[in-house]
Length: 219
Image (cartoon, one colour):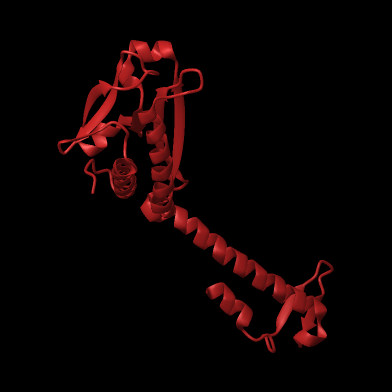
């Protein structure tokens, strides 16, 4: 808004301006309309103020909110069995729910200076047979989904792709899920994002306290 005001201020009169040239002479400008040099100087000054103002606003948005200097990453990792290009039905449904959850989280936490990064990993048949419960595993910031939602991991029979091996389930509040709903992923993601913001604020607060004094206590 301030930058716009600089453009709206009338330029019909400005105080007398003196310029010291390289040859030591002073050039005196009385009227803006009779001096093209002075007019261009004022326009460039306005442009500089306008761009500087919005550059400061953009910078402050990244540094003040939550204490971020750059976009921090909320990392979501998901792995599942892929055999001959196919996966089991519960993993396929979980992938669709995961995409919806990521889209929702981006809209919620991007304004806070957080960016959602989704990584998908394929498990081979050998890897799955060695550890079946590693399939359809979601982790957020290197912690499993069950950590964020106070859930419990179980197992149940799946399909022909998984063979005789039981696949991962998640139980929360007495309800067991074979495919992970988008709502649970969003809930876990928001909790993880809240932890990131609290951690950044605490770090910023402690940094300010330590710079102000040598006290070992944090605010």
